[in-house]
Length: 324
Image (cartoon, rainbow, N blue to C red):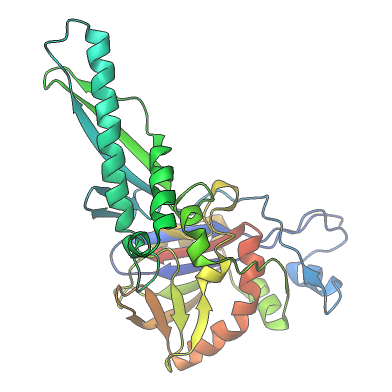
């Protein structure tokens, strides 16, 4: 049979209480005369380098608002990849021009919402040791960039008028992972590893053929969400730093990391028909508890899989679920 083969893999990190997800699936299109993902991979030359196509993005599995963290000024929607804040303005009841009074109140509400959004952004965990506020304090350029994206933040729906209370409310939002969002503003500090191509190891081929997902289960460890979590072995050796894949997070308007709270719902989806590979989080580390420590046997598993992660994430179909 002549058909196109689609290879998909999912990575899920589960935390305690709420959740986080990311959707990305490696897609091999227009591949003819093959019938399984293993055959597809084996048809390539042993040393072939695969260039990820980040133009195709799978539908998200995370439910916006599922993992939502309240901080001073607003909320961080880890599942929806958004930071939101609201502002209110008071209608001038002495102004005989009602339309003008509403417009002035709405403008005031936007200014307040921008101020609250800036405060909210400062509480976002970049990694297990740093919040956005640290970068804004240490780097003037970061403060300027963050202020700039706040001024250009998207308004969520129309302004809401409460004629009885005499106020106007406006909600603003901006993406966490996006070239025009928070990660774009931090890019000069985060660096640009530029991981764009990798070779496919036999172990990664085997994983793609056997499992529907790789699950990091941190439900008993109290894992917290952050923009760029790290994964360590029990001896403190760094196995994986997701900051290295910052270029792929937010590609095409979608993050490669999503946060979920209902792992059972995700695993009930058709794309998870095969059994996932579950890796238990031994403990969390870092000031904010957002980095993962794996046991000895699980560390070995991730050690060989990590070399395939740039390919999976860069393809725009890599799924990372984190249950908080």
